[in-house]
Length: 237
Image 1: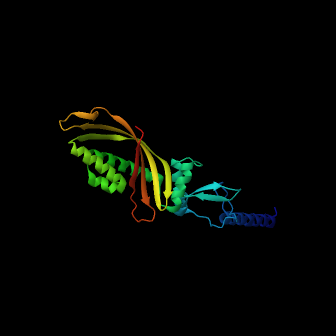
Image 2 (image 1 turned 135 degrees about the horizontal axis):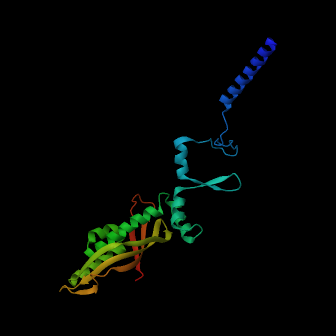
Image 3 (image 1 turned 180 degrees about the horizontal axis):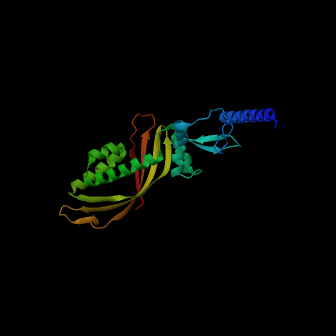
């Protein structure tokens, strides 16, 4: 038996194993989950952790010309959710966002539905104070005159707002600095008008009626006041 030869072989093997383990510790194992190589065409450094999750929540990468990408803002995503991309309404809403980046169609509709219910209820109750805060001067004058005429005849409206079946934006327009958004509401309302003797002269106190209204709201994009006011009304019924 050649003892020296065996010792040389063992030493060589030990060195090889040591080198392999060192390389493994430095380079790591490939598991299939590694980050792809950095693309020199992407000037942004890799982002990881909480910041990456926040950033991916805000934008969606869209393919454009191979490896190049562009991003879609939250407001644009919100527009596409209520108006099909490529439509006239989608273009109109994006023009609104161009001058008012804070505009969000879904949030607008939530506020518009609340305003719709408040206005319908206030008109039935003859509540001019509430209406004054929600309507433009011209629309308020029309509503107030109708209430005054009703009161002069000693008539009374009793109404119950059941709910809104649907609400959607149908048009958006920019007139000078004013942003005007038109929405179509389909609601369920119980309403009846009584004369001075308490007789029903219009409507039905026991019948739920479907009402369709097309209302236009506006606000001055230059104003710090974020509130919208009703500037035009139209009924399909």
